[in-house]
Length: 505
Image (cartoon, rainbow, N blue to C red; front, side, top):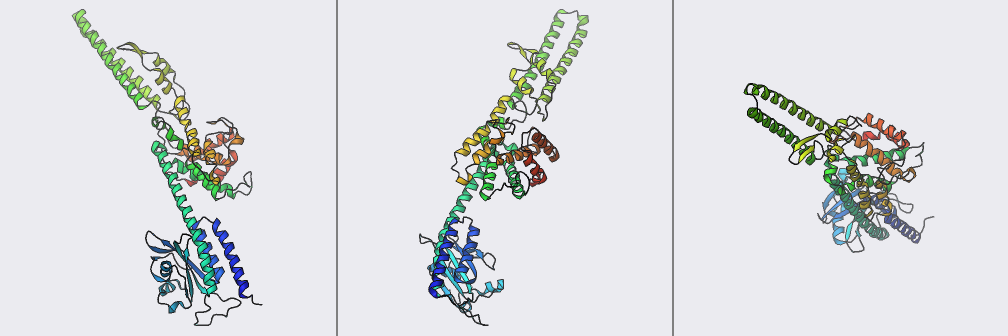
């Protein structure tokens, strides 16, 4: 038994209400437009549908969703869609080919035959035209006769027009919200990108590090999502959680903007000004030795037997050459000590001896090395003194403070916490808080593995050479055995070949 017109109308209105609720929650513009077209077809019983959005800057209509056709763009005052956009009035065309405004070339391109069409404006609550909603070819229903050969078939009626207009109004608001949401997202993505540029401009030696850590950490999250067995089988990350992980990874080193630049880019144990002073000092020592030799020669000419002068002068020259070479060797040794090593290395006893060895200066005897130089040159690993290292480590606190000032949405609120702990260790010996393992989120543990791997394999660090990936994985495995990083996560990192997601030159 055929339902009467009133029942059908109620059913369609209920559909529109349900659709309005669904549209109000969707923020992805592409998904939203697909939903609008799908529901528009259902509400009026159409075979196909399209949406043309209005680009006000270019005064063009363009299709984000045009079923059966490629994306198209045309002037906003052209064609049927353009007419509807200009007048804000619907157009119900029962026979498309009988209307001169219909562009038959589209059918010829797509192979689709348009019989009839209903086009309505999508007008927002502010009376702005957001776009045009169009449906094609009314489909025969239980109460509609079948399409006869050569006939335009059943047409859209006034009720269809009313329903599609109602849906278009709901769609316009949803689209405006989605576009606004998309604009805000792009703005925020731009802010994130600018922040990464700021980080890397302060420390060019780690250029690309933040992006690579984000790629690795998100890659590990994807591997975890696919895990069906093991300790992380029930751990899943939705869209917003993945975004949270990516943002935290990209911004984990932002606090470096609060660290002095000379500490950030310190490539050798001595700062450039310290090295310049050291070299100048040894030049002074050599000039002093030459001066003292000249004074001895003058004394020889004044007070020695003339028959012995040549022998004395030769002896003074030999002694000077020997002492100059010794001084040059000492400087060479100090310059070698100034070059950082990756692995701990002893043999700095000679530095202590040189710190107690003196040369003649204007103010009296002075040591070959001052206390600060001795401390720096005696660094067993890397290029940082304890004071330098504490300042570098402070970047984590700066990062947390910076990220905590941002009004994150509820779904991204854990970004400061996730980034805060990327240098913490599961044995409680990390920094800056030395927190126990239970307080380190899984997202942070993932980032820690990614951060260490990239630091070991990166080729852009001035104080060390890039490490082969196999060696880096061995070091990570050693760290896991020492209960410093998560061994289960490292297994997924290795087994899932997450490390292959970043290309090395």
